Length: 499
Ligand code: CLF
Ligand code: SF4
Image 1 (cartoon, helix red, strand yellow):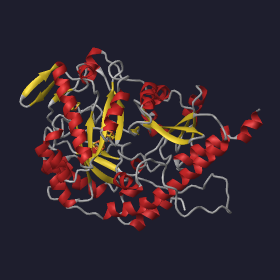
Image 2 (cartoon, helix red, strand yellow):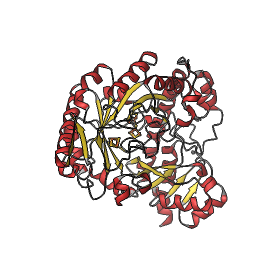
Image 3 (spheres, protein in one colour):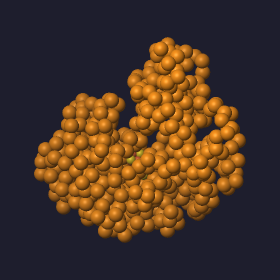
Image 4 (tube, protein in one colour):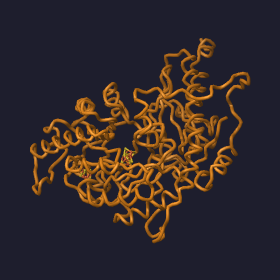
């Protein structure tokens, strides 16, 4: 039977029974055509994937390594590593690391002991928490002592929390054995080039072996250390994700080569992220007018890498102190002064959540199977983009006016594929017509927006400019709603009627 997952509802109950009651309560009547005779299969098909089952088990709760998991599981970052050993032209040290975060100051830099208390506070309150990452605001391995101490403290109390590191790779070969010994199973290396000449346009200097290097020599050392670190990690069976910042005119035509080179060395995933460049951030690129890519340019580079290393398309370039599902940031709720000096971990909420989500995920897979079948049966060649307002759980469960981002899916006879998210500068609620202009611009190319609720006034305005926004599928699974919409709009019978 289908559940309605209210993620808010899951933050307060402490037992699996309470969570199940919260899940079932507000379920709206299904709008799917009734078919009482149809029996559902007992278990959903495994998601189509070339990932072996053993690896799937290792990533299934990691919101960054698994697109499916990002609907259900949360990460948190602790900002214990402020120093960095290189300079990237897209970074200003007053801001978060642009490799793993959107520019914005880190609210608090933490000692390992403070970080430990924060992790326990979050683990007690956020049942979705599955990963602890250290992603700066500098380099996690340049500040290795603090990174190691933090992980050691946390893993004693919360041993099932996955440990994750993000690094520029310069110091990586020096720490691989310790990383492997500490059971750190996921490492991200930011690799923007495999050609040091291109590197000179991205890295003005590095600091290595107590010496500062510039020019092509700096990029050559960085490149060699990155490749060696990658090979050493994959030789030990550690999962490596490679992040690349897409910088138009500098490495846009080069990232397919990066993709091939990192695949050859065993990288598990390649995450191509758009350069965020704003003069207000004070970065070299921001101040010199280097622009970031458009969504279409980003998609074109990602598409050019298809068939190589698997691509991650759901990255949020989150802060170095982010907390929560990837589509949210609850970091402000867990400031140090709000956490007691003496705090103990209670596993009840996280354990209960896992039991409930296991059931929900199976139900979701069934819904995806049904949606794939509906799309295939529609027999259409149409490919359309659909934007979704969601707070997670794989559902259409956010009001249009509250959305700060929309998830974008492509629907075709091949199925429903997540292709990325589009951020809006301001929510419609509070931002009014100016915010609506921003939403319209952000959703260029999108045919329809599905949300949990929209008022008549914004709906009419959006309809008038050709952007349909409907709440007919409120709280439904994303794939189910898209499958039904596509079948109605593009299905064979409908097309015949229109002919
Ligand atoms: Fe953090 Fe990075 Fe680990 Fe994830 S983030 S250290 S792998 S737990 Fe994730 Fe954030 Fe993108 Fe990073 S969405 S910026 S990819
Ligand atoms: Fe900034 Fe991260 Fe580059 Fe260091 S590695 S300069 S912190 S973006």
